[in-house]
Amino acid sequence: MEGFDVFGSDSSSDDDSHHNNHSTGQSIVTLNAIAQSITLRDAPALWEVIDSIELNGGKGLRATTNIAKGVEINRESPLVRCPNYYPAESEEKAIVMHKACVKQKFAQVKESNYQKLMSLFCHDMFCDKEGNTTEYGIYQTNSVKLSGRDSSSGGVFPVMCRMNHSCAANVRHEWNESIEKLFLFADRDIEEGEELYSNYGGFDVNYKTSERRDFLQRNFGFHCLCEKCHEFDDGLSSSSMTTRSK
Image (tube, rainbow, N blue to C red):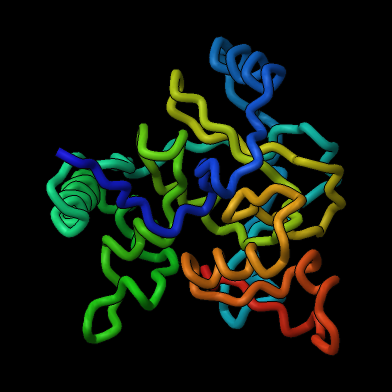
């Protein structure tokens, strides 16, 4: 029997065809050390949720202080997790299995967390016929793939999924299965007030602008006009940047 990858618009894909692997030996050692710690971060949050300047009513995350490269910005457990991959006779049957899993997982969360989940953005392609948000749409739009293609699972993280996309992201994700948390690290020095950007496709720096845009359009429904893409455009205003609403 064949198996099918049913993971949709994953905000932090580890698909080898699109991802530049950040999980170096050093980072693995660092995360193992964190996993053994008996205390979590007790410092004030290094981020805040904002109304993104690039979106009409959309959300984003912004640094509340200067953050040095490599510093842990946040750690978060998923409210729901589902497999990325299902053994099935057809892709259609795998999707049915995936939808059933999403429905079951959403039914298991407590009411306060359910409200957090349902407040997230749902891509139009996953809404019902009346245009209403669906649980499946919330999962497919906001979930993060936690390990390699066709393996492990994905999860929804209500804070981290608020981040918008840039092909020149200033943060990176790292999943630690032993403590079931997603860590967010600064990928370069970040200034206070600067918006935090994730790379939805995990692109290698050598990918062409057309390739990145094609992937983002197909998977997330927007034509990217981030700073990196805008460098290659003639006659386009950076103020018209298009990203996914949250």
